[in-house]
Amino acid sequence: MKLNKLLCKHIKNENFVKIYISTKGYNLTHFEGFIFEQNKDFVLMNDMRDFNYDGFVVLRKSDINEVKHTGNEKFYLHILKKENIKKKIFQKQKQLDFHLDTLQKMMKQIKKLKIPVICEHLYKKDDLFQIGTIQKVSKKRVRMRYFNARGKFDFKLLSVGYKTLTFIRIDSPYTNLFYKYTK
Image (cartoon, rainbow, N blue to C red):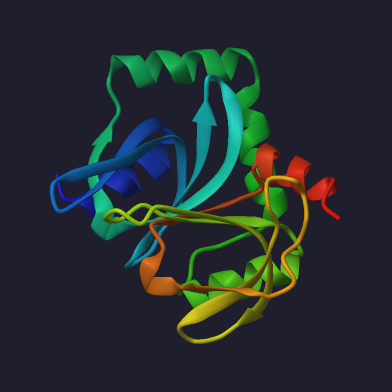
């Protein structure tokens, strides 16, 4: 089944899925959750880790290697429904009111929401983990107010080129809690 049709089916049926992303035969990572939207270039889904909500991720469709909805994911969905976790995730998505568009327009949405974001680059050898708030948005890049592992903001804004992004993560408990204690 073609990717667009497969994603549409999982969105419509509110299926819990596991999505693997890779580039040039190299597996990068995977995400587990519900797919909320797709457009020509991107997919918006939530991410789960051990039954815990871990924010929403935007990933490139061109990086998707596999979408799984096996018996394992179906059983996971059963648990999420029984524990009322699925309902809470769908409410969060509606509350956040974030939608797919171009990277530039999505970064403008994040800036307007005034929430921190994680931008990750997993291609090749240069893995980058960038966390902070969006300060300036341009056509090819975003400038972030980066904070380090001690909760301190850098003096200079960090420039992040859209072409280098593997995925972005918003509304994650990690980011939100970390941001709460930044200086």
